[in-house]
Length: 68
Image: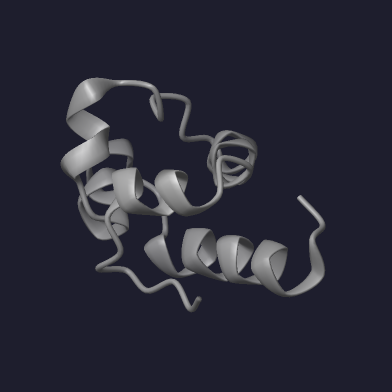
């Protein structure tokens, strides 16, 4: 699986719940919010003033290495 800025948070969490920890470590603490389940990473990062590229890279790094 390769994550992009267009990946939907709910779909990512359905595939691997540990992605929630990666998101929270990045500063996105609303992963349990019902609205976030339908948002893309880009949309969520925009709302939180985060760099989507950094978040995508963190998730892909976790998926490749297993390190959160």
